Amino acid sequence: MSYENERNDNNKEKNKKKISAPPMPPPSITPVTPPPPMPPPSIAPITPPPPMPSPSIRPAMPPPPVKPPAELPLSPPSPYAPSP
Image (cartoon, helix red, strand yellow):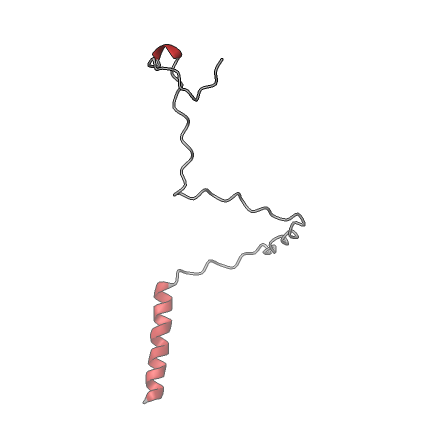
């Protein structure tokens, strides 16, 4: 009885393969050329790409634009400023 079940299972598998597998194309008449051999690995060391900056580190903000002296508020000279 187990032999019959095995044979039925084999038949089912064959039927599934026939249905799911596309028909095989006819064998090619032209000889299949083997792919070209792989080139030897380069002797020069491969340099890794530069590390990407961390997304948490933002580039430094550019300094604020310098106002022309006419727009600066007039303030008394600081005692710490160098004397001319």
